[in-house]
Image (cartoon, rainbow, N blue to C red; front, side, top):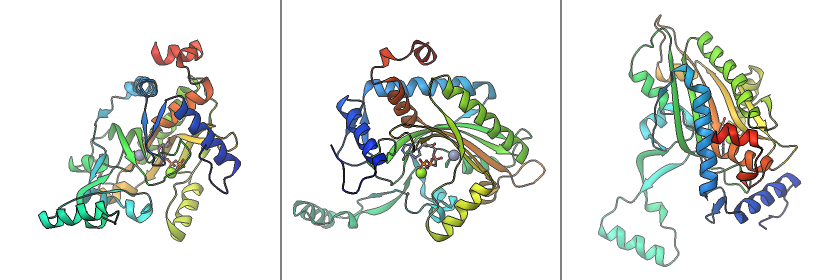
Length: 312
Ligand code: ATP
Ligand code: ZN
Ligand code: MG
């Protein structure tokens, strides 16, 4: 088992669960921490859960948008992500050289030398959270209608946080509902999803707790941002024990950004005020892992009530 020196009991639990998932064929290792293939059974659970989210959210008439797992570089630069999370971002680089540069690339590869420093940045950045392409898209439309905007997005995301915890992947899927509007509209949306999210997860017979949380803002200034995010109650997470009982994992998050994205993208309500935004995010792999943890690796042996919710 891949247990590294100085591991805590929680980390050993994570590594053990990871090995078990790999042994069962649910996750397919690639040799890179946090980068996995998924089996057909795993994908079926993700797809059924995705449909369940749609069922719970469908009454609201969200505008469905699907983006590839890349954000336009100019939008990413404007989003402010690099101010808060430079340590998590992943940029797409590509070869742009001539034949000589190609020969040099092949030689360096052959000799085991560094070759990636010759790669040049493209205009694509890996999506860090599914909602990032939504704000500039809504901003393009001009002032919001009176009932604001509600968008349904689903995307693979990248975060550079390699880990032996199978619930902390570098590439994973996030389904989100994103609300843009007045502070009242946005707060009402978030509150309704805290309640719905809890009920949805309880319908899967999972042990859940909702708690205040903060984002991992970078650096010393970041610690202050995190503290103020907590003080203002801007982020809540729905936690489920996955690999460790005393360190439960965030499977859903409920985020109120106040006017952060509204100011960045000049999002306006009909009366000209800066719009507020909020989003609810579902970590698809984490929910699948929670189901495998609590109901076992054999989906046919899951409780009948849970099977009925997912497979009808
Ligand atoms: P954590 O505190 O565990 O790092 P987070 O606060 O960074 O989570 P969000 O930024 O709110 O998470 O992302 C929304 C959802 O995406 C999370 O609730 C979680 O379910 C999922 N998620 C976040 N990071 C990862 C990851 N590295 N691997 C798998 N799922 C993730
Ligand atoms: Zn979001
Ligand atoms: Mg995180």
